[in-house]
Image 1 (spheres, rainbow, N blue to C red):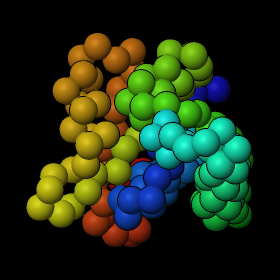
Image 2: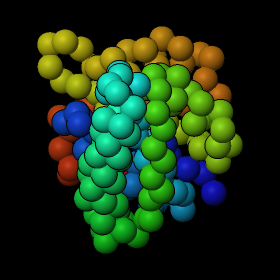
Image 3: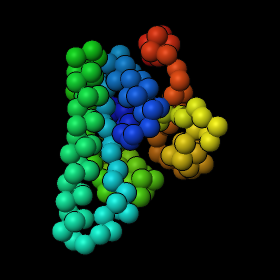
Image 4: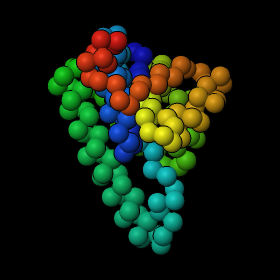
Length: 151
């Protein structure tokens, strides 16, 4: 089964990327894998404090994921899988693609503010020629109705 890989973060555009991936997976018989990356700089404290912060970050990610997962299961009949990795986001996204051969498409949400589409979209499009899978970039301000129409 082909999987759509979506990056879970706190950005507004993440919502449209999740919606797009779930809708495409539902219509094509695919799956959704949600990747959350915890950057290493969050834990540069004493060992005990860093461990506690790491656990709190995981709990926040799991709660955030569950909101999307419930919608995917209830509305799209897709049961997503959560993967949490620690490290540099770019490195970990590329590693996840390399480590899971069932991933067929990377889905990213593009920011709509004046700063540009976002650091992940910018960096991944620069290296898209060397990726083993295509990237789908979903505009962050696209309406739900438009997403439904194009999926």
